[in-house]
Length: 161
Ligand SMILES: [Zn+2]
Image 1 (spheres, rainbow, N blue to C red):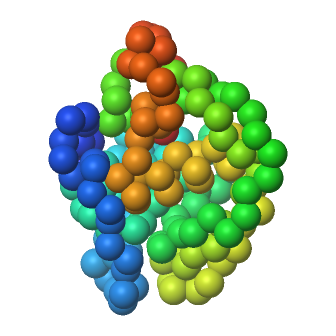
Image 2: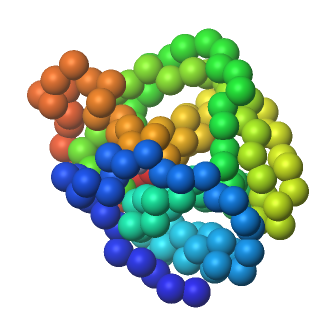
């Protein structure tokens, strides 16, 4: 496994719509392993493939104390509720901002063996899923802010997604 450098704003790759994965083969499994390694090495709780320079619809999530999740071609099929949350992003280092997210989401996608999976998620997991799936569409949480003045500086040890 390899730790890969994270792309940060204003890298244009972060603004591309990532492509669907057509064949789940060894190269995708290797990508997922590298993403997990990279995410854990920097203490992130989620990472999308475009953040390491690969414009494919693949995300990984690693919430402390829970099993890692890898999702290929994830799609949000249902959103419920709304709440304001503080959010940061490894690609926007040093800042957080407050955004509106659904409280619960249902997501479908495939795991790294190609098996279809469905996830019902609340709270933090729901937030991370929304954040990482946004990355696949070239969206960043800062796009929800009315102005960059709403960003707040953070200490480096705060969790980023
Ligand atoms: Zn992010």
